[in-house]
Amino acid sequence: MIALLLRDLRLALRAGGGFGLGLAFFLLVAVLVPLGVGPEPATLAKIAPGILWVGALLACLLSLDRIFALDHEDGSLDLLATAPIPLEGVVAVKACAHWIVTGLPLTLVSPLLGLLMNLPAEGYPLLLASLAIGTPALSVIGTFGAALTVGLKRGGLLLSLLVLPLYVPTLVFGAEAVRRGALGMDVATPFLLLGGITAGVAALLPFASAAAVRINLR
Amino acid sequence: MAMSIWEYANPKKFMETSSIALPWAAGGALLCLIVGLVWGFFFTPDDYKQGSTVKIIYLHVPSALMAINAWLMMLAASLIWLVRRHHVSALAAKAAGPVGLTFTLVALVTGAVWGQPMWGTWWAWDPRLTSFLILALFYLGYIALWQAVENPDTAADLTSVLCIVGSVFAVLSRYAVNFWNQGLHQGASLSLDKEENVADVFYFPLLVCIGGFVLLFLTLVLLRTRTEIRVRRVQALLARERMA
Image 1 (cartoon, each protein chain N blue to C red):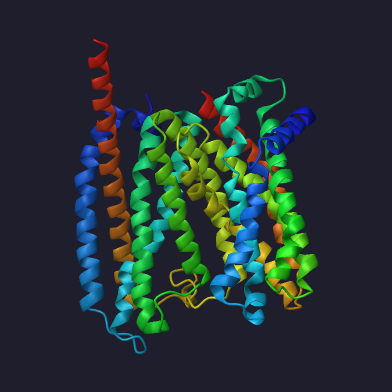
Image 2 (tube, one colour):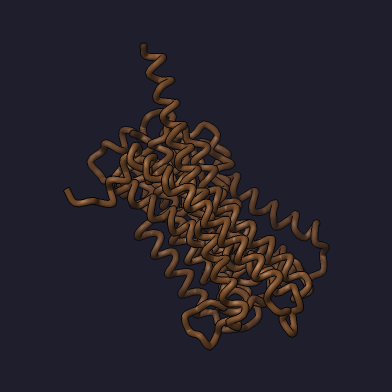
């Protein structure tokens, strides 16, 4: 499984473009929103947590179809499905690799974008923490969506339609944690719920994703 | 042999039974809706605060109720398909999707029409309103997945998995948005706890309307399932033609 993780990471890094694309998109969102909303620091500070979370979510969405599509095209997905490790494990590893190449960099650059969005100082640690806890859930849920649409020719738009409603709880709790933190309120509840969602989907959703992959490979 | 509910999983048996049940369900739906709506619209007093706008409750509450129950029916049918592989079950789930979406949209639109005079706004990011909008998105995704996958069995499997996962997330979203914003929408008006209910004079016509909507849902789903079964038969015939 570690070999598979390394292979996925290597492919993602060397394929060119795919890796940086999500980050560039995230940056663009943080640049475009102030241009659209206007440069008042107070307004930006107010909407910063929500915009940064929505930006991270959309950036994550961009790269979802790559999780299985290339492996499906060249047939390595069939090999993985017949490999001695369980398909649930393969799917979990792929979600993990997706998180390392999208979720983790997004989390790491988010303070910089928080600066652009005039996020209050108390918000930074919370933004980092909420993205670090929440983005794995985005990758795992996204892997499920990618597994559902793996056999389709033009699955990209459908994938967004399927995955975005599933992102609602993660988004609500993640953005709420940062918003409350920026206002100086108690943040334990949204953080616990966010962590609960991540832990829950990481434990259960690989089974659904693996089932969907099996159906699609049949 | 003892009768088993699974006998209706046989398409032929289902077609026979549903052809008998369909006119009764349709007639019952028509009767209940006419009685309930006429009673509700013309023979109940106006609310002392809301005036006659309160009467939209006879469309709003039953459609909202059925929007949720349609998803539950799809969930049950999806589970039956995954466990027992009865094609009628998968087709019934497929048939219920657009019906449920329509009920969701009716609930949203009547809610907006009601909200405008009462709350002074067509739309508010209230937990109930928001979760219904999300429910509509779930329905859209479900229907779109049925449309997108060509192989009918694969489509049935994938949509069933989506329906199960979606159910969990729909419930999660419902409580997540609760947490996120306090609402304008009133609490339960039909709970078994009598204290909270609407007054009896509105309650009884409302029950008749709900009965009408349940029968309407049943009628539409039976009709659409029968259509799907016929489509399958036609496709099977065409395939046989090509083979010959």
